[in-house]
Length: 61
Image (cartoon, rainbow, N blue to C red):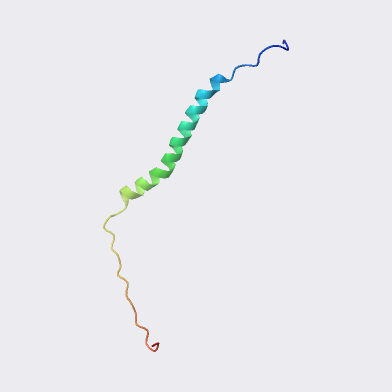
C-alpha cells in the first residue's frame, strides 16, 4: 500500500443518510399521530355525562 494514496471518497454515504433521516421522521410522525387517529376513530361520540350533584353543608354558616 502506498503512503500517498488518497482515502476512499465518502460522498456516496450522503443519500442513504438522507433516506434514513426521512424514514426516521416518517416513523416518528406515524408513532405520534396514529394512536390519536385510532382513538378519534373508535371512541364513541355519544358519551353519557353524569351530572354533578351539589350537597349543602348544614351547620356551616
